[in-house]
Length: 192
Image (tube, rainbow, N blue to C red; front, top):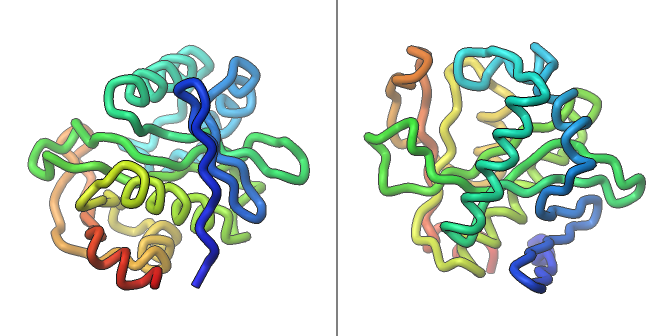
């Protein structure tokens, strides 16, 4: 059993700490490194239609993620490497409004720069985000929406204890996707 991440709540701010990561709200200095992550075609290959994003699109995305924190009490965290302070990408929770057939739902998602792949960081970050959703925000069910062929993200969902529940098509991109799910009951059974 993994030790629960510590959660610090202060002035509408939430920070989660894991052995290697700090999950926190977004800062202005995160825009350049997140833009670099979003500009990498290999990173973006499995996101929506696979298009890369520029600085303005990244700024708009971060603004939308921060708005979700304000309206829902959860959102996407900036993922910082504890030992270096480097921004690795994001993980967290969002409402998948682009896929009405699964609503109401909260989605766990992650996106890390390529230099941070293959180290278990996405799983570590997403585990903390799931615990936050279930234990701190009282969510009953969290989904993950993974494009067919994205085997790395499928492995992460398996490590998180999520199970595939349905295949469908993303209406915004036409790509085939699988919906994975974890309930609060399943989560509590695996964290005892």
